[in-house]
Image (cartoon, rainbow, N blue to C red; front, side, top):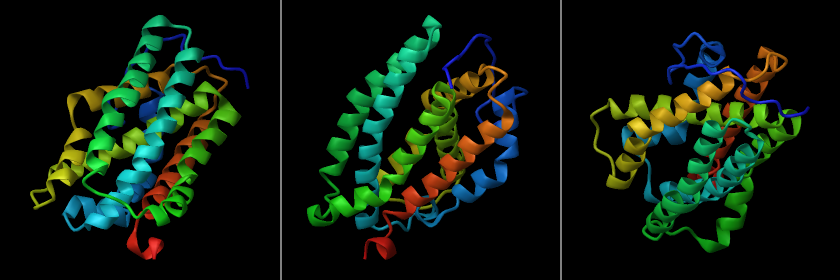
Length: 232
């Protein structure tokens, strides 16, 4: 399908309560979002029981996906004809290849992963990249922004709920949760929702649902890939 993004501006609220297409999409997929926010890895991070080796493997796969996300943001920049939206995609590229890459490099130095097992770990986690690449092949810009909206909405949901719980957590885990409830992150989620609102009408709700749910299921497999019982 030819890319035809963004001709009409709109707004949504990050948790999906808005009246636009993204709000309706989140509402339709709310049960899937709740299930994905409760998988064992995220539950252990939320309740403070995640082990150092598991968190280290999680950081390794997240670092790898940040590099994919940077390429996706560059693709969205190229595809976006409306300049203010293109600037937002450019800002995402800068953040991903700059501060976020540095963040992972610094943090991973404190949470080393067995190099011998790293290729298998990254292969297990590659389901996330494969899923968003499929969405790109199927829907171009629409498939990418819908997939990214699914991933970021999931993180906003589970981290918001985790942040509301007063439980002891490792400092690095607490910081990770807090990074995903900042005003800046909420603004990024709202931006992705806005992009979904502005997709052309020939991108049907069924297609949006398909990409959104596929990304959530890929996130489930991605998160599972770091667990001890999988790595063993």
